[in-house]
Length: 427
Ligand code: GDP
Image (tube, rainbow, N blue to C red; front, side):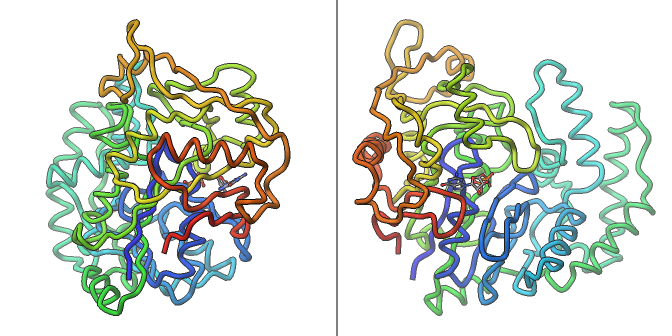
C-alpha cells in the first residue's frame, strides 16, 4: 500500500491541512516531517475549525497514528497548549507520537531569532520569531537538544549546561542582553518532559510495521516548495526543506517507499513575508483576491501578498518534487472574476525565460508574461462532480494541468471536507 506525500507546491498556505484531513480517512499513519510551529494547517470538519501548528492533520481519526517526525522542531509549550486545546474540544490525542529524534525549540532560540532579525535591519527575512531557524541551525551545528533527551533528566542537565554556556556567551557578548538561568530553563523543560513523556518514542519501527501491514501512510508537508532553503527564493526561505525528498528524511523512510507525491497548489498565488513573487498584484485585483480569499496568515495574521497563478514556478515545483498528481485548492475564490491570468513566462532584462531563476535579484526583475482565460462568474462551492463545473472552470483546470505538467487529482471548492471534487483517484 502506498506512502503518499502531500506537499505545498507554492509559498505555503495552499490548503495542505484540508487535503491531509481528507486523505487521512484512508490512512493509518500521518507524519509531519518538517518545519515547526510556524505551520498553521487549517482543518474544517465535523469537530469544528482547527488551526494545527505541530499536531498532524490526521488527529481527528482515532485509529490513525499521528507522528511528529524527527524532521520537525518542537516548541514543547506550543505543543502542550495545542494538545490541551484539542482535548478541550473533544479531540482525542492518545494517537499522537513525538519522534525521540525531533529537536526542541529552547528559550534561547526564540530570543536569538528576534535579535538576529533585528540586526538584519532593512534586510530582515520576515521570520515569525518563533525560534525555528535557530533551532534548525543548532541541529546542524550539533548544539541541538532532542525530545528524547527530556526522558533522561541527568543527561539532559549535562547537555543543557554545555549548550547554555555557549548560548549565554552569544546573548551577553554579541547582543549585550542578560543570560538565561540554567535552573529555570532546566526545571521548565523537565516539566515539559514529564507532560510529554508518554508521547515520545522511537518512530521508524512503527512506520516500518505500518508498511509491512500494507497500511496507507501520509507524509504531511509544511510551508511550500518555493520557501525551500536550496530551491526557494534564498535567503527569503524557511529553514527546513518542504520538498518531497525531505518527506523521507524527516519521517525516517527510504525514498523507494514513497509511491505518490501530491502537489497542493492554490488556483492563484499568495505569499507571506519578504522576498520576490513575480505575479504579485499590488492593485485592486490583488486586493480582491485577498478579501475574497481572506488571505491573512493563519498563525501570524499578516496580510498575504496575492497574485495570479505562476505556471513557471509551478512547473519548477513539479520538477524538483516529482509530483505524480496535483490538488488545486480555492478554485471558488476565482468565481467572480471576468478574466483570469496565468503566468507562462518571465521577461528578464529584455529576454523571455521559462525557468525560475536562482537569484532573488533576477526574480525581482522578472516581469510576468500572461495568458488570459475567460472567467466563469458562477459559484462553484456546491459542485462535487468535475463535469458540473462551468466549462470555463474546466478549461482553467485543463490549462493548469498542461502547464504544470502533472494530472489534477483533486479540486477544492471550499474549506469543508465535502467541498471537494475528485477528478481522478489518488489511491
Ligand atoms: P495550509 O497551511 O497549507 O494547510 O493552509 P492554511 O490553513 O494556511 O490556509 C488554507 C485556508 O484555506 C484555510 O483557511 C482553509 O480552511 C481554506 N481552504 C482550503 N481549501 C479551500 C478551498 O478550496 N476554498 C476555500 N475558500 N478555502 C479553502
